[in-house]
Image (cartoon, rainbow, N blue to C red; front, top):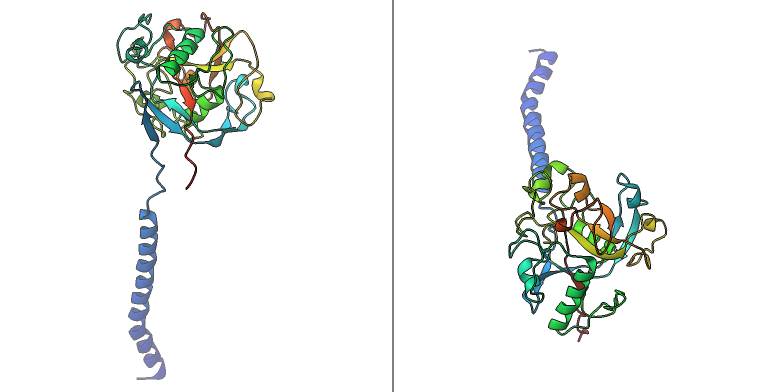
Length: 301
């Protein structure tokens, strides 16, 4: 056997060892990647849900900031801006006819049903209900019943500001809807023109948003406390904006049973006469839900 034959034999004997080692390193690397991929994504904290004296569930919305508006939406949704919102409590569902009827005996809703949302209701009547609910539960009412002015420092119930409403609707998301950007998934979260059978439906039948709020898209459009101004975003404050001082219309949010998908977007906003309706929404497509200041935490011991 010559020297060249010896070298070839050595190479042949050594080759499997290198192959095995290479395979081992490859398997080890694959296992590392597999373990890393199996790590669970951070879980979103479950919302804190409180039950009021009147038996209505409310979600404690955490303080935070978000991008309000839409760069691709209507003109009145621009410019998109960073907004800071304090913590507050929000009704988990739209106001139902059963809950409303405990304080207001006359049910003027078109689509009757105890678990259907209240509709056929003006902004003023929604504000009056907030005061009745506050008094019933021993809180300081927010609204001056003569002027409609809201005292935000009061402990009672009121309608959400437009910023509070959108912040709660988004629930930390940044897409067009609280579940993402694909309108084809809207039927899982909302009753709207394509699936509503031309009427409201009982609340809390669809998937809630990440903070546990139901029907933020569709079913009935919801009154906000703010006066509507299509140019308000251009000069609005960054911290707890509360809308213009006065104007002929109030803000509606969320879309309704008769709305197209676009009108159910998180950023979609429209102005409505507080006592009647225009071409945007029929009165049987307008309802509301209440908010209240977050309870103060006891001082640390």
